[in-house]
Length: 123
Image (tube, rainbow, N blue to C red; front, side):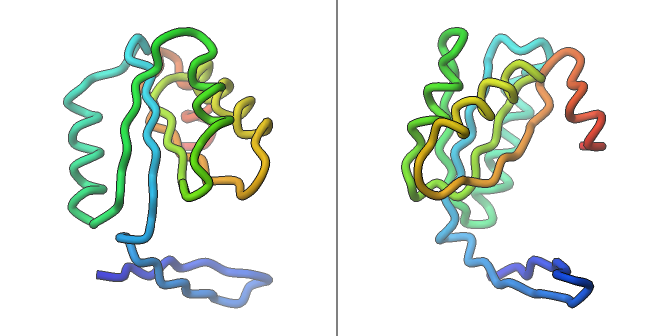
């Protein structure tokens, strides 16, 4: 299955075919985030797996760990998905800014208490 991603560039439609089997997603979760639930994480990962997306899941162990993980992601990682709150997203962005090489897309699983960024982005 090759889902089409619809986008526009200068109001011209662009369709890009993505082979999910070639996508590599790293999901990094703060397990002490206020809204974190293992069941929600499992459902999310199972959906990606059903699409054939290669998913690796890591749990943070201490403050600053997510920054270190984001900074040292393998170059083949296409997407970093952060499961946590605003502090977790902040750590991820700090780490991504330290990277050299290709920048992965950033996704958010709003597992925090307030999730201000996720609310502002209407996620």
